[in-house]
Structures are given as structure tokens and as C-alpha cells.
Figure (cartoon, rainbow, N blue to C red):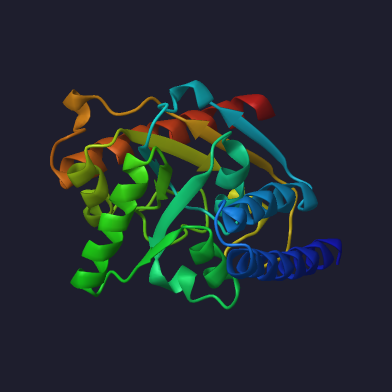
Length: 241
């Protein structure tokens, strides 16, 4: 019951924060006020959930724009990433996220981008806008699995998600996320105890595919994140002994 109640509180809090972000964008344009509201929402979401967030590898973030490529476990992933970094992040996500009532409009007002993968013209337009954000020094997050895994497994990475990195020439930084699938399991909104982890890995080198084909970049990033997943699993087993 406690987990269900906390989940309801998070849903209501998200709805209220979304309205606040939309109003801030419409009534007080300029100054990235909607972005600030959603950043505050992400940090507060993690605190209200009662989770402890561990962030590692912040020193691996470039000083300028970069494409952050993360695995995707849960709805908690977005608040985790908003909480983890000292700089604002933007998301390039599938259109379905932008269609969520109120929340989608709030995320769009905060400068996040949603792409219709079945519409090539929409994809080109969104990638152009994401490239402009990278040139402005923004951190842009992509989830190349396309959907939440629902567990700790790492799904296949869609190479199309790496077209942005290929065309922009921005650094590609893998980010390993863990704990979200335990915090709020896929298919529900019941809050459960969990430790959350955001681990920023070193950016890809030219030898690993950075600057190469999108297929090669996808393969290199997925291999990195798979190694981190295996290492974390091994560490957890050792800690239980």
C-alpha cells in the first residue's frame, strides 16, 4: 500500500509540475523557465521516491555539446538523468512520450524533442534541431533501445538513433543506468525500494567508431554498456556473499 500511495503522489506531482512548466513557458517566455521547472521536477521526483542516486564518472562529460547514449529501464530514467548532471540535459525521444497528456507538452516547452520514427521528414527536422542544441553546447540524451527493457537486460540498439552523432560530429558519451527497473517496474507505477545508478563512461574514441558509420557507433556504445552491466552484476553478487 505504501508503494502504491507513493506512486500516486509522484503521478500527481508530475502532473502539477507539468502544468507549472507549461504556464512558465507561456506566461514568462525566455530564460528557459520551463527547462528549470522540469529540472527541478526530476530532482524532486527522485527524492520523493525515497531513492538514493549514485552518480559516477561526471569527469567524463565534455565541456561542450555531446550525445549521451543511455540504456533504458524505467520511467525513472528521465528523472535520474535530470538529477545527475550539473548542466541541463535535453532528450531526443520517440513521439509517444511527447503525446503523454500535459507531461509531453511540458517536456517540449523545456526544449526536448520528439521524433516520429515512421515519418522521415519529421526525423530530419528533429535531427536538425537537435544538432543546433549540440552546437549550443547542450547535452542531448538518446535511448537507442527505443523502449524500456523492463529488467536489467540491454536490448538491441537501433542504429538510426546514432544518425545525430554521425552527422553532428559531437562527442558520443555512453551512460549506464541501473536500478530504475526495480524502482518502478515496467507496466505499473508502484514505487519500490531501489538504489539508482548513473555511470558516465569515457567518450568514444575514433577507433571505437566515433565519426564513423551509425552502425559502428551503435555497436561500440552497446558493447561498452554491456560490459558495465556485466561488471555491476558481478559486483552485486560479490556484495551478497
